Image 1 (cartoon, rainbow, N blue to C red):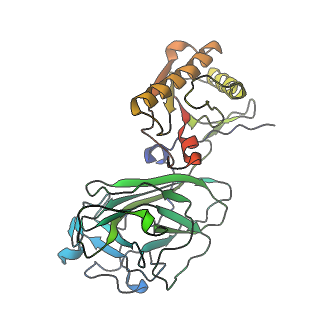
Image 2: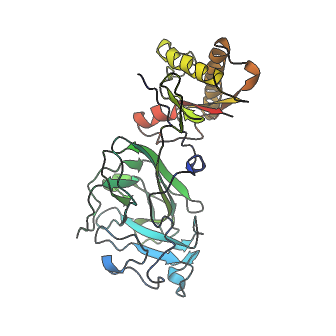
Length: 349
């Protein structure tokens, strides 16, 4: 018996709202003591379920603090309203030496070969003279409490190569990865490789010479490959999914011969269930002109529509949308990420 798997859409966390977040204190709302000073040691870090994996002095800010330097939204680093709740953490990344992180134990170990969606929000503090890239999340089987203060040598599973320099808004660092199995700890911070991973901001406090970030709202969610099983032919589907086995040549809309068997199975599945509308959403990577990518993504969706019509799906029930590169599910800085972002999403209503 052959099984065909379709991955649930990940363009927003709302599509995964039914899944449990594996982070125990995701928005740093629960704390041992209201912050009133900088973190002096690994043991003195206030948020519950979080601790410091290195000798860095990651700080905690919360509106409960009577010390304005450690409150929110105003504090000694600038002004930022929490992404969620009343608190957030603050890390400093120097181009050399000090780099700060936070670590937490997941609610349960990651499952081998299962896919997980990870997301956290960052905002550059107004005190920063630099912005950095290679902010990410590293998953490990073991916890660690190292005496070092410099950047960790690990390669995180989730990583952004964009320089994050927005001091007004929260910027999401997000992605998907397949677990090796048994990972129980997440470490978040800047995994930089030296001065090349920093750029000057043109503002900030000159003596700091560092990239300084607020971090909030961490999510780690198991992606269920399917919601329901179709027992007639052994195929597995859900109402919302990405056609993992449907691809296009670069800058083309023609359906490749090797993808047609998957579209045939999709057409058979749609015909054998009650539905009112099929929405086909095209996505591209960020290479090229925005307007052209939107047109390309729409034309690819239209190609899928035409194929489904030929295979018996009424044309009046099919709607096409082109999103271009506006909703990436992985970074566009790698070929793997770009290939994941070039996708066709299906919603059956």
